[in-house]
Image (cartoon, rainbow, N blue to C red; front, top):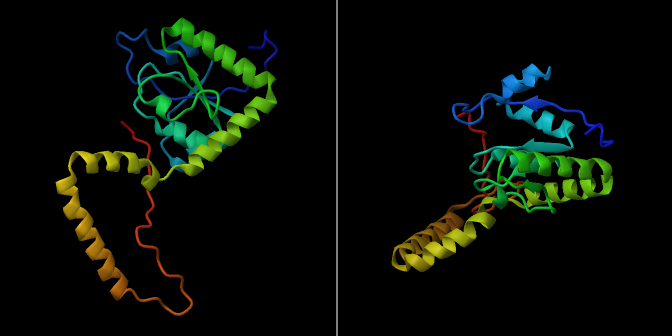
Length: 203
């Protein structure tokens, strides 16, 4: 990257999940060339500080599900650059709020990663645009919005079963409205308002 005129400050964090049959330990490879690898971070506050420090978050995994670290990065405007494996493409819209790397083989991943970092390093406007859209996407995520398509499909598949649930919910809401009390000067609570706490898995 230096030969290409791109100056980067790196921090490599993590550990081997599995190395048998996967090309060996990448930690050992970095240590052989004198690059320090920091241990994994599980504390949410420290993870947020790391994401706030960085402009770009790189996740070159061979296997993934739907990594919560991508959501954490986007929430802080840190642009995710990740291999297109598992459900990663459901979290990143390529070229809009992050960058997807082809996961064909290690050589292609390396080629795409270099091109992505070079482009972001030389075009600050593109970096800022992706950062803003990443933060916007993270801010738009909520339980109700993302569950609606799934729930609508369930209602179509099992209309009889969910009809009873709807009636029960409607009766419960009526009962709540009848017994709700509000202290003087207090704002009434919103029925159905919920907060979801997401923790990074340690497994």
